[in-house]
Image (cartoon, rainbow, N blue to C red; front, side, top):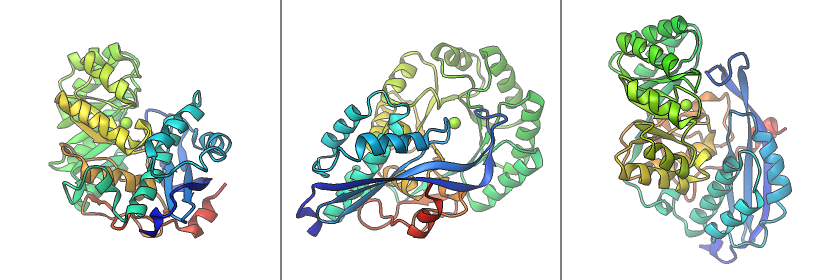
Length: 374
Ligand SMILES: [Mg+2]
Protein backbone atom coordinates (compact mmCIF):
# COMPACT_ATOMS: atom_id res chain seq x y z
CA UNK A 1 0.00 0.00 0.00
CA UNK A 2 2.85 2.36 -0.82
CA UNK A 3 0.34 4.40 -2.78
CA UNK A 4 -1.25 5.52 0.48
CA UNK A 5 1.91 7.34 1.56
CA UNK A 6 0.98 10.49 -0.31
CA UNK A 7 -2.32 10.63 -2.16
CA UNK A 8 -2.09 14.29 -3.17
CA UNK A 9 -2.75 14.88 -6.88
CA UNK A 10 0.56 15.87 -8.40
CA UNK A 11 -0.33 16.08 -12.07
CA UNK A 12 -3.32 15.90 -14.41
CA UNK A 13 -2.87 15.28 -18.12
CA UNK A 14 -5.38 15.18 -20.97
CA UNK A 15 -4.67 13.52 -24.30
CA UNK A 16 -7.07 14.04 -27.22
CA UNK A 17 -7.17 11.03 -29.52
CA UNK A 18 -8.77 10.07 -32.80
CA UNK A 19 -9.43 6.31 -32.91
CA UNK A 20 -10.41 4.75 -36.26
CA UNK A 21 -13.51 2.57 -36.15
CA UNK A 22 -13.79 -0.78 -37.89
CA UNK A 23 -16.94 0.43 -39.60
CA UNK A 24 -18.65 3.72 -40.26
CA UNK A 25 -21.40 4.75 -37.83
CA UNK A 26 -24.77 5.46 -39.43
CA UNK A 27 -27.85 6.00 -37.25
CA UNK A 28 -30.91 8.17 -36.84
CA UNK A 29 -28.66 10.79 -35.21
CA UNK A 30 -26.42 11.43 -38.17
CA UNK A 31 -28.10 10.79 -41.48
CA UNK A 32 -25.71 12.00 -44.15
CA UNK A 33 -22.85 12.52 -41.66
CA UNK A 34 -21.23 9.12 -41.12
CA UNK A 35 -18.56 8.84 -38.42
CA UNK A 36 -15.43 6.82 -39.15
CA UNK A 37 -13.38 7.57 -36.03
CA UNK A 38 -14.00 8.41 -32.38
CA UNK A 39 -12.75 11.81 -31.25
CA UNK A 40 -12.22 11.00 -27.60
CA UNK A 41 -9.78 11.87 -24.84
CA UNK A 42 -7.74 10.20 -22.11
CA UNK A 43 -7.35 11.77 -18.66
CA UNK A 44 -4.39 10.81 -16.48
CA UNK A 45 -4.21 11.68 -12.81
CA UNK A 46 -0.95 11.06 -11.00
CA UNK A 47 -0.43 11.22 -7.26
CA UNK A 48 2.67 12.39 -5.42
CA UNK A 49 3.44 8.73 -4.60
CA UNK A 50 3.38 7.92 -8.33
CA UNK A 51 0.01 6.17 -8.51
CA UNK A 52 -1.67 6.71 -11.87
CA UNK A 53 -5.40 6.73 -12.59
CA UNK A 54 -6.90 6.87 -16.06
CA UNK A 55 -10.27 7.94 -17.43
CA UNK A 56 -11.80 8.23 -20.87
CA UNK A 57 -13.80 11.08 -22.41
CA UNK A 58 -16.18 9.22 -24.73
CA UNK A 59 -18.88 10.99 -26.71
CA UNK A 60 -19.85 10.20 -30.27
CA UNK A 61 -22.72 12.68 -30.82
CA UNK A 62 -22.51 15.60 -30.79
CA UNK A 63 -18.84 15.64 -31.80
CA UNK A 64 -17.57 17.46 -28.72
CA UNK A 65 -14.86 15.08 -27.49
CA UNK A 66 -12.02 17.37 -28.48
CA UNK A 67 -13.62 20.61 -27.24
CA UNK A 68 -14.03 18.75 -23.92
CA UNK A 69 -10.31 17.91 -23.94
CA UNK A 70 -9.67 21.62 -24.44
CA UNK A 71 -11.97 22.45 -21.52
CA UNK A 72 -10.08 19.88 -19.43
CA UNK A 73 -6.73 21.48 -20.32
CA UNK A 74 -7.78 24.99 -19.39
CA UNK A 75 -10.16 24.38 -16.48
CA UNK A 76 -9.16 21.08 -14.83
CA UNK A 77 -5.48 20.39 -15.45
CA UNK A 78 -4.19 23.51 -13.62
CA UNK A 79 -6.71 23.31 -10.75
CA UNK A 80 -6.76 19.75 -9.40
CA UNK A 81 -3.12 19.35 -8.31
CA UNK A 82 -2.89 19.63 -4.54
CA UNK A 83 -6.27 17.98 -3.95
CA UNK A 84 -6.40 14.60 -2.18
CA UNK A 85 -7.07 11.97 -4.88
CA UNK A 86 -8.87 9.79 -2.30
CA UNK A 87 -11.31 12.59 -1.50
CA UNK A 88 -13.20 11.78 -4.70
CA UNK A 89 -16.43 13.53 -3.75
CA UNK A 90 -14.59 16.74 -3.01
CA UNK A 91 -12.54 16.60 -6.21
CA UNK A 92 -15.65 15.98 -8.30
CA UNK A 93 -17.53 18.82 -6.62
CA UNK A 94 -14.59 21.05 -7.50
CA UNK A 95 -14.65 19.75 -11.10
CA UNK A 96 -18.39 20.44 -11.30
CA UNK A 97 -17.81 24.04 -10.25
CA UNK A 98 -14.91 24.47 -12.69
CA UNK A 99 -16.95 23.02 -15.57
CA UNK A 100 -20.03 25.15 -15.01
CA UNK A 101 -21.52 26.10 -18.38
CA UNK A 102 -19.36 23.72 -20.46
CA UNK A 103 -21.42 21.83 -23.06
CA UNK A 104 -21.35 18.10 -22.34
CA UNK A 105 -19.44 18.56 -19.06
CA UNK A 106 -20.86 15.20 -17.84
CA UNK A 107 -18.59 13.29 -20.26
CA UNK A 108 -15.50 15.00 -18.91
CA UNK A 109 -16.69 14.62 -15.33
CA UNK A 110 -17.18 10.89 -15.97
CA UNK A 111 -13.57 10.61 -17.16
CA UNK A 112 -12.34 12.34 -13.99
CA UNK A 113 -14.54 10.06 -11.86
CA UNK A 114 -13.10 6.98 -13.61
CA UNK A 115 -9.54 8.19 -13.04
CA UNK A 116 -10.23 8.85 -9.34
CA UNK A 117 -11.80 5.40 -8.97
CA UNK A 118 -8.75 3.90 -10.66
CA UNK A 119 -6.38 5.76 -8.31
CA UNK A 120 -8.39 4.75 -5.24
CA UNK A 121 -8.43 1.09 -6.24
CA UNK A 122 -4.68 1.13 -6.82
CA UNK A 123 -3.98 2.93 -3.54
CA UNK A 124 -5.95 0.28 -1.62
CA UNK A 125 -4.88 -2.58 -3.95
CA UNK A 126 -8.46 -3.59 -4.72
CA UNK A 127 -10.42 -3.75 -7.97
CA UNK A 128 -12.81 -0.91 -8.74
CA UNK A 129 -15.85 -3.19 -8.34
CA UNK A 130 -14.96 -3.53 -4.68
CA UNK A 131 -15.33 0.25 -4.32
CA UNK A 132 -18.66 0.13 -6.17
CA UNK A 133 -20.30 -2.16 -3.65
CA UNK A 134 -18.69 -5.55 -4.27
CA UNK A 135 -19.06 -8.09 -7.02
CA UNK A 136 -22.42 -9.86 -7.38
CA UNK A 137 -21.73 -11.56 -10.75
CA UNK A 138 -18.73 -12.77 -12.67
CA UNK A 139 -19.70 -11.42 -16.07
CA UNK A 140 -22.21 -9.23 -17.87
CA UNK A 141 -24.37 -10.45 -20.77
CA UNK A 142 -24.13 -8.21 -23.82
CA UNK A 143 -26.37 -7.29 -26.73
CA UNK A 144 -24.73 -6.57 -30.08
CA UNK A 145 -25.44 -3.34 -31.99
CA UNK A 146 -25.92 -3.05 -35.74
CA UNK A 147 -25.69 0.25 -37.62
CA UNK A 148 -27.80 1.26 -40.60
CA UNK A 149 -26.63 -0.40 -43.81
CA UNK A 150 -27.97 -2.79 -46.44
CA UNK A 151 -30.41 -5.38 -44.97
CA UNK A 152 -28.22 -8.32 -46.04
CA UNK A 153 -25.17 -6.81 -44.32
CA UNK A 154 -27.23 -6.21 -41.19
CA UNK A 155 -28.44 -9.82 -41.31
CA UNK A 156 -24.83 -11.02 -41.60
CA UNK A 157 -23.94 -9.05 -38.47
CA UNK A 158 -26.92 -10.56 -36.67
CA UNK A 159 -25.89 -14.10 -37.65
CA UNK A 160 -22.38 -13.36 -36.35
CA UNK A 161 -23.83 -12.08 -33.06
CA UNK A 162 -25.88 -15.27 -32.65
CA UNK A 163 -22.77 -17.42 -33.23
CA UNK A 164 -20.76 -15.30 -30.77
CA UNK A 165 -23.32 -15.82 -28.01
CA UNK A 166 -24.76 -12.33 -27.60
CA UNK A 167 -28.06 -12.18 -25.67
CA UNK A 168 -29.92 -9.66 -27.83
CA UNK A 169 -29.52 -7.64 -31.00
CA UNK A 170 -29.97 -3.92 -31.32
CA UNK A 171 -30.35 -2.28 -34.67
CA UNK A 172 -30.54 1.32 -35.70
CA UNK A 173 -33.81 2.31 -37.37
CA UNK A 174 -35.28 5.68 -38.33
CA UNK A 175 -34.82 5.63 -42.09
CA UNK A 176 -37.70 5.44 -44.59
CA UNK A 177 -40.22 2.96 -43.17
CA UNK A 178 -39.81 0.55 -46.10
CA UNK A 179 -36.02 0.49 -45.58
CA UNK A 180 -36.45 -0.03 -41.85
CA UNK A 181 -38.90 -2.85 -42.41
CA UNK A 182 -36.55 -4.60 -44.83
CA UNK A 183 -33.76 -4.32 -42.25
CA UNK A 184 -35.94 -5.54 -39.35
CA UNK A 185 -37.21 -8.51 -41.36
CA UNK A 186 -33.71 -9.50 -42.49
CA UNK A 187 -32.21 -9.17 -39.02
CA UNK A 188 -35.13 -10.99 -37.35
CA UNK A 189 -34.67 -13.92 -39.69
CA UNK A 190 -30.95 -14.12 -38.92
CA UNK A 191 -31.40 -13.50 -35.20
CA UNK A 192 -33.26 -16.72 -34.42
CA UNK A 193 -34.63 -16.52 -30.88
CA UNK A 194 -32.82 -13.35 -29.93
CA UNK A 195 -35.04 -10.38 -29.13
CA UNK A 196 -34.56 -7.26 -31.25
CA UNK A 197 -34.00 -3.82 -29.79
CA UNK A 198 -34.83 -1.06 -32.26
CA UNK A 199 -33.10 2.29 -31.74
CA UNK A 200 -34.46 5.26 -33.69
CA UNK A 201 -32.26 7.86 -31.95
CA UNK A 202 -35.21 10.26 -31.99
CA UNK A 203 -35.63 10.13 -35.76
CA UNK A 204 -39.44 10.21 -35.86
CA UNK A 205 -40.75 13.72 -35.46
CA UNK A 206 -44.25 12.94 -34.21
CA UNK A 207 -45.91 10.32 -32.03
CA UNK A 208 -48.09 9.32 -34.98
CA UNK A 209 -45.10 8.72 -37.26
CA UNK A 210 -43.36 6.70 -34.54
CA UNK A 211 -46.43 4.61 -33.80
CA UNK A 212 -47.01 3.81 -37.45
CA UNK A 213 -43.46 2.45 -37.66
CA UNK A 214 -43.60 0.58 -34.34
CA UNK A 215 -46.88 -1.15 -35.20
CA UNK A 216 -45.40 -2.20 -38.54
CA UNK A 217 -42.24 -3.60 -36.88
CA UNK A 218 -44.26 -5.49 -34.27
CA UNK A 219 -46.02 -7.37 -37.08
CA UNK A 220 -42.79 -8.70 -38.60
CA UNK A 221 -40.50 -9.39 -35.62
CA UNK A 222 -40.30 -10.02 -31.89
CA UNK A 223 -39.35 -6.62 -30.50
CA UNK A 224 -37.87 -6.28 -27.01
CA UNK A 225 -38.35 -2.51 -27.05
CA UNK A 226 -38.15 0.56 -29.22
CA UNK A 227 -35.51 3.02 -28.08
CA UNK A 228 -35.91 6.79 -28.24
CA UNK A 229 -38.54 6.80 -30.98
CA UNK A 230 -38.93 10.58 -30.85
CA UNK A 231 -36.64 13.48 -29.91
CA UNK A 232 -36.02 14.44 -26.28
CA UNK A 233 -39.52 15.57 -25.30
CA UNK A 234 -41.39 14.04 -22.37
CA UNK A 235 -44.88 14.57 -23.75
CA UNK A 236 -44.03 13.11 -27.16
CA UNK A 237 -42.36 10.08 -25.60
CA UNK A 238 -45.29 9.49 -23.24
CA UNK A 239 -47.73 9.60 -26.15
CA UNK A 240 -45.70 7.00 -28.03
CA UNK A 241 -45.55 4.80 -24.95
CA UNK A 242 -49.33 5.00 -24.50
CA UNK A 243 -49.97 3.80 -28.03
CA UNK A 244 -47.11 1.37 -28.44
CA UNK A 245 -47.59 -2.41 -28.61
CA UNK A 246 -44.00 -2.88 -27.35
CA UNK A 247 -42.06 -1.28 -24.46
CA UNK A 248 -40.46 2.11 -25.03
CA UNK A 249 -36.91 2.85 -23.91
CA UNK A 250 -35.58 6.32 -23.10
CA UNK A 251 -31.99 7.00 -24.11
CA UNK A 252 -31.33 10.58 -25.25
CA UNK A 253 -34.17 11.54 -22.86
CA UNK A 254 -32.40 9.92 -19.89
CA UNK A 255 -28.97 11.40 -19.23
CA UNK A 256 -29.17 12.21 -15.54
CA UNK A 257 -30.90 11.27 -12.30
CA UNK A 258 -33.11 14.32 -12.84
CA UNK A 259 -34.06 13.03 -16.30
CA UNK A 260 -34.91 9.65 -14.79
CA UNK A 261 -37.15 11.35 -12.23
CA UNK A 262 -38.92 13.41 -14.91
CA UNK A 263 -39.45 10.33 -17.11
CA UNK A 264 -40.81 8.30 -14.23
CA UNK A 265 -43.12 11.11 -13.07
CA UNK A 266 -44.47 11.50 -16.61
CA UNK A 267 -44.80 7.71 -17.12
CA UNK A 268 -42.96 8.34 -20.37
CA UNK A 269 -40.82 5.17 -20.70
CA UNK A 270 -40.74 1.49 -19.70
CA UNK A 271 -36.98 1.05 -19.60
CA UNK A 272 -33.96 3.39 -19.37
CA UNK A 273 -30.65 3.33 -21.23
CA UNK A 274 -28.03 4.69 -18.81
CA UNK A 275 -24.45 5.64 -19.61
CA UNK A 276 -21.54 6.02 -17.23
CA UNK A 277 -20.36 8.82 -19.54
CA UNK A 278 -23.65 10.74 -19.46
CA UNK A 279 -24.40 10.22 -15.79
CA UNK A 280 -21.02 11.75 -14.95
CA UNK A 281 -19.35 8.64 -13.53
CA UNK A 282 -19.94 5.06 -12.38
CA UNK A 283 -21.46 5.98 -9.03
CA UNK A 284 -23.83 8.47 -10.62
CA UNK A 285 -24.94 5.83 -13.13
CA UNK A 286 -25.49 3.43 -10.22
CA UNK A 287 -27.71 6.03 -8.55
CA UNK A 288 -29.99 6.08 -11.61
CA UNK A 289 -30.17 2.27 -11.55
CA UNK A 290 -31.16 2.43 -7.87
CA UNK A 291 -33.76 5.11 -8.37
CA UNK A 292 -35.34 3.46 -11.42
CA UNK A 293 -35.11 0.03 -9.80
CA UNK A 294 -37.03 1.28 -6.78
CA UNK A 295 -39.89 2.12 -9.17
CA UNK A 296 -39.67 -1.17 -11.03
CA UNK A 297 -38.19 0.46 -14.14
CA UNK A 298 -35.37 -1.70 -15.54
CA UNK A 299 -32.19 -0.11 -16.89
CA UNK A 300 -29.28 -1.15 -19.03
CA UNK A 301 -25.85 0.37 -19.47
CA UNK A 302 -25.47 1.72 -22.98
CA UNK A 303 -22.43 2.48 -25.04
CA UNK A 304 -20.76 5.56 -26.44
CA UNK A 305 -18.48 3.00 -28.09
CA UNK A 306 -16.13 3.50 -25.15
CA UNK A 307 -12.67 2.07 -25.63
CA UNK A 308 -10.82 -0.02 -23.05
CA UNK A 309 -10.78 2.48 -20.20
CA UNK A 310 -14.42 3.53 -20.41
CA UNK A 311 -15.59 -0.03 -20.95
CA UNK A 312 -13.55 -1.22 -17.96
CA UNK A 313 -15.41 1.34 -15.84
CA UNK A 314 -18.73 0.00 -17.19
CA UNK A 315 -17.63 -3.57 -16.50
CA UNK A 316 -16.67 -2.85 -12.88
CA UNK A 317 -20.02 -1.17 -12.33
CA UNK A 318 -21.89 -3.94 -14.16
CA UNK A 319 -20.52 -6.74 -12.00
CA UNK A 320 -21.39 -4.76 -8.86
CA UNK A 321 -24.97 -3.69 -9.64
CA UNK A 322 -27.48 -5.60 -7.51
CA UNK A 323 -29.95 -6.12 -10.36
CA UNK A 324 -29.16 -6.54 -14.02
CA UNK A 325 -32.39 -7.49 -15.78
CA UNK A 326 -31.24 -7.08 -19.39
CA UNK A 327 -28.06 -7.41 -21.40
CA UNK A 328 -25.82 -4.34 -21.56
CA UNK A 329 -24.57 -2.68 -24.72
CA UNK A 330 -21.06 -2.01 -23.48
CA UNK A 331 -19.28 -3.73 -26.35
CA UNK A 332 -17.36 -0.60 -27.41
CA UNK A 333 -13.85 -2.12 -27.74
CA UNK A 334 -15.14 -4.43 -30.50
CA UNK A 335 -15.75 -1.32 -32.63
CA UNK A 336 -12.07 -0.45 -32.94
CA UNK A 337 -9.13 -1.44 -35.06
CA UNK A 338 -6.84 -1.02 -32.03
CA UNK A 339 -7.52 -0.21 -28.40
CA UNK A 340 -5.71 2.27 -26.18
CA UNK A 341 -5.26 -0.29 -23.39
CA UNK A 342 -2.46 -2.83 -23.43
CA UNK A 343 -4.52 -5.95 -22.66
CA UNK A 344 -7.83 -6.02 -24.55
CA UNK A 345 -10.96 -6.12 -22.41
CA UNK A 346 -12.27 -9.65 -22.15
CA UNK A 347 -15.43 -9.93 -24.25
CA UNK A 348 -16.09 -13.59 -24.84
CA UNK A 349 -19.11 -15.70 -25.72
CA UNK A 350 -21.27 -12.58 -25.65
CA UNK A 351 -20.17 -11.59 -22.12
CA UNK A 352 -18.08 -8.73 -20.77
CA UNK A 353 -15.71 -9.40 -17.87
CA UNK A 354 -14.27 -6.85 -15.46
CA UNK A 355 -10.47 -6.76 -15.70
CA UNK A 356 -8.49 -8.22 -12.82
CA UNK A 357 -6.03 -6.12 -10.94
CA UNK A 358 -6.34 -3.03 -8.76
CA UNK A 359 -8.42 -0.05 -9.82
CA UNK A 360 -9.87 -0.32 -13.32
CA UNK A 361 -7.26 -3.00 -14.08
CA UNK A 362 -6.14 -1.47 -17.38
CA UNK A 363 -2.78 -0.18 -18.60
CA UNK A 364 -2.34 2.35 -21.38
CA UNK A 365 -0.87 1.17 -24.65
CA UNK A 366 1.42 4.12 -25.31
CA UNK A 367 2.25 3.03 -28.85
CA UNK A 368 -1.40 3.30 -29.79
CA UNK A 369 -1.94 6.50 -27.81
CA UNK A 370 1.00 8.17 -29.56
CA UNK A 371 -0.38 7.03 -32.90
CA UNK A 372 -3.92 8.25 -32.19
CA UNK A 373 -2.97 11.47 -30.37
CA UNK A 374 -4.10 14.63 -32.15
MG1 LIG B 1 -29.59 4.83 -28.22
